[in-house]
Length: 87
Image (cartoon, rainbow, N blue to C red; front, side):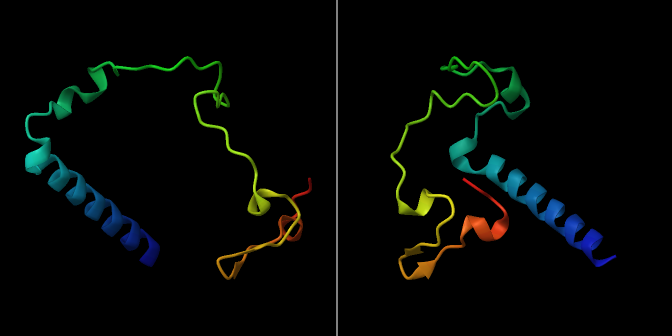
C-alpha cells in the first residue's frame, strides 16, 4: 500500500541522513560504535519518569491557560474545552 512505501522511503531517507551526518568532517573521530558505552559527563538526579526538577520553571502566560481561545501573533489558538479537556 502507499503508506508502506511512504514509510520505507522515510526510513531509507533517515538512514541516509544519519550516514551522511556521521561522515561530516566535524564528526570524524567519534566512536559511533561506542556511543552507548560512554558515560555522560553530567547525569542529573531524577526521582521518576515525570520528574521535571532539572528543567527551568516559567510562569504561565495567556496561551497556557486551559479553556481559553487566545490570539498570538495574529493566530487564534484552539480552546482546550473544544477538545474535551477541562481545567
